[in-house]
Image (cartoon, rainbow, N blue to C red):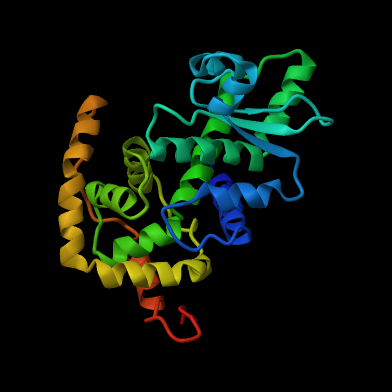
Length: 274
C-alpha cells in the first residue's frame, strides 16, 4: 500500500503545522520544543531507556525487549492511560536518537498508536500492507520535521544543486540528518514528483535561518561541504549494493528557481517573501 501524492501532502502539512506550533525556526531540529508542545494538552510521556532501567533495576540492554524495540517505541495501552515514547539514549549517535524520537512523534501525531490499539483489541493482526503504509507515513512525517521540503528545495536552488549527492550533502551538512535518512530522503526527491507537495508560504518561519546560513556558506564554501560528504554517500550506496544511478536535471528545476526568486534579502520586518 504505497502512499499517494495526496496522502504525502497531507502528512507534510501535518508536520509543518507541528513545527509552526512548536516555534521551530532553525535547524538542525531540536526535539525538546516539539515534545514540550505535544505534552501540553496531551497525555504523553517520554522516557529514556536509562531512566526505565534504573527504575526497574535492570540492565539497559534488556529494555528493548520489554518495550518491543531495540531503539524506540510508542506504547499505548488504552484511553485511560498515558501514551509513552520510550527511546534508547546510549550507545547510538545523537543524530540517530533525534531521528528515533522524531519517528515516534510522527506515529503519535498521525494516530498510528490508535490504529494499532484498535486492531489489537479486535483480536486480529495488522496486515503487512497496512504496517508498511504506517511506517511510510511516519518516515515522511519525520523527514519533513527534520528538513522541510520547501527549505531543502530552496537550498538546492541557491546552491544550484540538482543531483542526489548534492541533496545528500544539504541534508547532512545543513540539517545534520543521519547518513541513512539523508540518503533515502535525497532519493525520494528524485524518485517521485514533488510538484504540488510544497507550499512557498511555509518558508516564512525559516527565512532568518536561510539567510544566516547562506551568508556564512556561499556557493564555493558549500562545494567544499559537498566534497566532504561524498565518501559517505558512495560508501552507503555500495553498502546497499545498489547500482549508482546517473544524475539528471530535475523536471521541476523551474519550480525551484521560482522559489528562490520569491525569497528576498532579509528586511527589518522579516517579511521575506514577495
